[in-house]
Length: 108
Length: 117
Image (cartoon, rainbow over all chains, first blue to last red; front, side):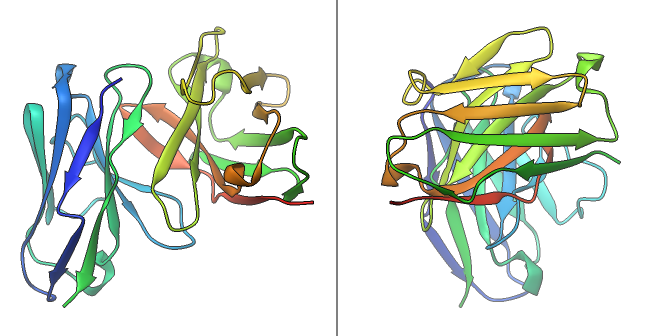
């Protein structure tokens, strides 16, 4: 099982600031099969990034993903009020699929 | 537009079986291009992947739940289902179904299942 460790646990930032979230895998995620999701209370997870760096249609370009192997990053270039939420990484390279523990991005 | 909708009892007694159904619209489960998954979110905690299936019958489960979980499909109704046996309070969570390919772009709204007597 690939264990994903996200850091930091909580990120306190102001609107307009840049957010950098980390996801580290216990072993290499093949083909960069890693996704990032945004989760808000009472809502389903929303896919932001797939294959480490690809944005689905409709996701704003302030969200970007990078990385390969065991180290991945989600960057939100300029935080908007609606971006304050919990973010999860997920690997789908190997079964069982696994999620990281999440990073909460909160308003400072 | 792909839509998924979970349905099932919101309250299950301890030791009984939790059964949920996900109804899919906008795409046929039997086209074989995607996997169909269940994930849960415990109150105040993170996301936990339960398992997924491919139309042609392959299923994959979270090892921590494997002995209690079954995911199955009814192509005539374009639905897939989750059965979780011998539930305890630790299984109280919001359960989501989703369509997967590269990541999971489409999710149901989620349904809260409480395990309590």
